[in-house]
Length: 522
Image: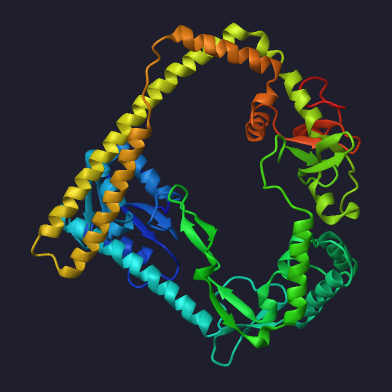
């Protein structure tokens, strides 16, 4: 029987035995590679098995593990009789694996670890120890990278502008000055400090020299700022400026800026391109410009990422402008704003308040059907109450599962046959899950399950809110709420050079402007 990588091998319609295999990286080939896991499982089963394989996927989350999710769907459908794994930790880490195994067993699937057996108590010890080993391994890896940094080695990733990676005599990769790029770096500092000009003008002058960026794109003020603020140019190399946190829903690592006291700093004069005085003058000038032109905190405006330039295809960004009549927000081509008029010839500029007026006008027809909308509100209120009850049931179920797992860990701690090292790992897991249980308890308290005692009062309040919304619909929402509304109701729009707005999907084939609604000409 031929078994494909995606598991489709003709078992549909009857129960079958399967295997699940996973490895985290190409480096993990020390006896537990995919091939070894498959061979061990099929040898233990004494026959070919259906394969569910996730390659280069972390075990700390189910997010992104498509084959594991498909395996669970097959189990829920009652198609799997027995599942073989090389080790339980191939399914995931500690508590998560307990839940997965219990779910599989509830669907009638017998889960077998070909190296660890099927005993539930032994499985608990093995998973806790495996989770602790993973944590220790991560700490050792991080410590190894810090040591490489202290030895002057490059720890990975593309080098900053002005530098290149070279291999030293000892075979290690280190940074060295890239002389051609270093000349551009010096030109940027000299230009910025010689005249009272902004970063956009510096970028324009670098472009005029015909110098490409590292990736071949145009120079912008963001690239100029990153060079002017890079302390490596004075020989200061920082490590651990960022850390990565695992998003357990997606399986992706998300970067986060670290506190400065966690940075590991090295001094290497061989990497110096700019002298200290020049660098400090640049920092002072950047700081002075920030004081003279304070920037507001970033916020989502009503039409952010919904307006696109017909000339270059880039997003229209909001900017604030003031005159004798007052302050207004305008949307204009972001590429033109960043790189200057020569980057895009679309000079169209749209006032935000006028666009919002179109939103108000476009919604007028909706408010003509007050009774129909209120009927929908009543139905939504009933659904919300039912959703709250479902959430309460779900949280209670998770708390019960947590109590069960904590009880198992407590029994393991009391087992005299378990070694002291394993008990330490179990104790750490126990503390972690007691914390998770407390979080679930607090979440349960936060869920307000309330019944509507008087639907007439609710409808009266809704009717009043409806009348206020009809008078000033856009004004009652935050900019972020208007943004979501535009995304759902209107969708992306293209701005033509003459200021007209068309639906984006029509812009490539026709310049006919929509005559009614939000999307229409001035």
